[in-house]
Length: 238
Image (cartoon, rainbow, N blue to C red):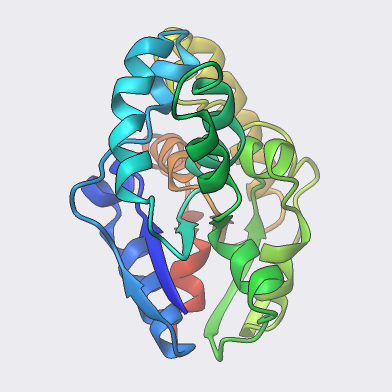
């Protein structure tokens, strides 16, 4: 099939290897991949801040740009939830409500697309390290994704998955939350980092680069050895 990628703005700007890894994996599985260059932000920052008219202005080009897509795969549980769960709310009562519903039905988070959409759990990856997995809030609570990333990690050669005690606890990022409440955000992130370090893992893995960006910042400041990495980068490793 033809897979259209929606690459979140922070991945495009700061973590392009995540998107590159996704392209390599999907092409390896025999699919055609396209990534429209005229689509930017999904509108989530404005939406979460209560600025819905502004969020619609940002989201409308996304609706238009993805209108003819066969399937849309998102490199983030957060932006995936925005397109799949919140676009119908955002466009309720407008002439684009039906269009938002159609798009919602075509949207997949990356790991869930591989496992439940394609029936793939082994992509031939090899990554010699101990890792622990962080469940991003939007992917877990809005999209209900829990087992798919773990099924993929379990099939990676030489990788050992060690669950942290509170893997479902928020890392404290929350997008605009971390900007509005930095002290609370930092305290939550420190709890999450401590939980990850207690596992003895070499890496914290997640489906969300935004969460990993927050955690890596805290780990770097505190000179902790554990590192962060997106699931797609592990799956693209050989």
